[in-house]
Length: 85
Image (cartoon, rainbow, N blue to C red; front, side):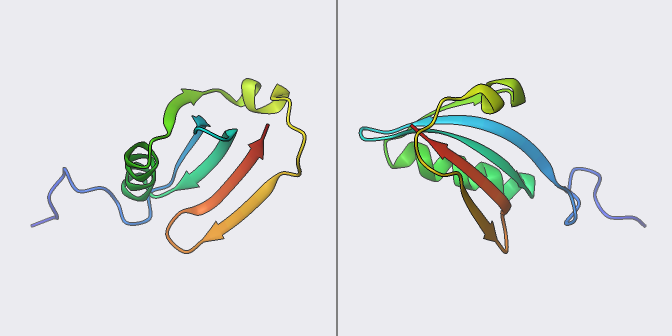
């Protein structure tokens, strides 16, 4: 018998763009990773007082930022690119 069909594949990768606003910064994140890990990351940002909104690749590409792009390579999240205002 096969595994339960409602289980997410352990090799699944989801990609999304998020605009995140906190009391002292605004950034757009380019995220790729396992769907469960991304949901956990979003939940942590909201719990820490951030406002999180889904955005598009177009908005990421035209987002005006005055600092360097930060790249984080995490074992569970895969890739996070952040552009800060």
